[in-house]
Length: 236
Image (cartoon, rainbow, N blue to C red):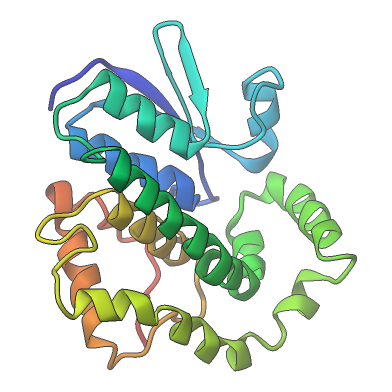
């Protein structure tokens, strides 16, 4: 691998596995460009102190005098400073990928949070759980994590249906990027890796052949970057 050494600050669970869909996007983006990096693992409660208040979320990258947060800013920075093996072929693809991101957030990540927020709590480091519960239950207007996820089995079919646009595309192409993966794939794979980090409820049906084959192809990318014995099954 080539490229300047940098640090990637990432959120980790009690078992040490990376647990943010946005960090996973950047993990894949760095691998796409062949950039070596040093991982700096942080728990939920360590993130604010790590950056002196400059960032309350990860991913954050640091190299030389540059420190950047927000996955989109990082992705565009990587293409600007390392123009080989681009994540976006041009402004048009960048704009279209941002549209996909808006759909992904509204229709997929929001639903995933509703299904797996209690699993995230249980998988977090013990010292992070009180903070995670208090902050997320405040976001849920005082409902407990247990109350919020009590009907998640009934909500699972709607989650699976929301992924229909991905199946339609993958019925014609091996990757969202067409013949080869691009940042659109890394956004979706980031979401799937996030679920695989914590899930106690399989996200997908066993008979979901299109997404199964896509996920298996993707696990082989970049010398098996996505393979991890700590990952939970995504399929029934």
